[in-house]
Image (tube, rainbow, N blue to C red; front, side, top):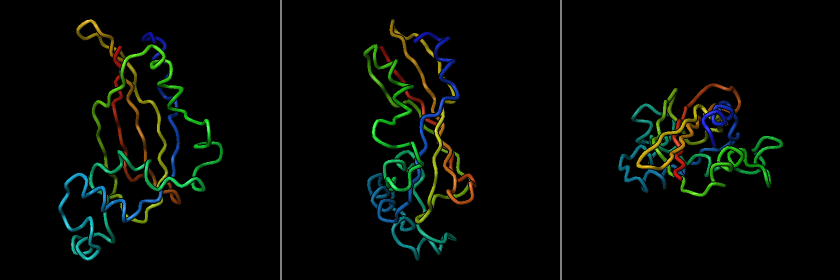
Length: 167
């Protein structure tokens, strides 16, 4: 994919996902990432820390779309069989072979992600560019997902990740 074609994917949607943030998944994720603070397992500890319930560990939005994304919550026409907006972004790159790598990841919090939240994540391609390194072409696709409260639309967390395709 040439640089000119990459400009065409900037702004392209990568999908919308609605999730219910579940207490059990938050505790399991905290344990998996070696987060030992009791606020991730005990509501009393979370309350003492000034929170209404269990918060998500800081990197949880990276996996949030994989947990609690029940079919009945998904927007009409999205998330169904054969619907994968991200495939239309990465498909042309993958058709050339090579590998896909996860580059950097960042999170901007507008408020804590909490157990019981019902959030809608809308992803878009924020940037796309290529670089040469050691005779290999690397394509960088920056995906931004804005997670908002489903009912009010208030922003909760913005996640940006860099996907690298190397041929």
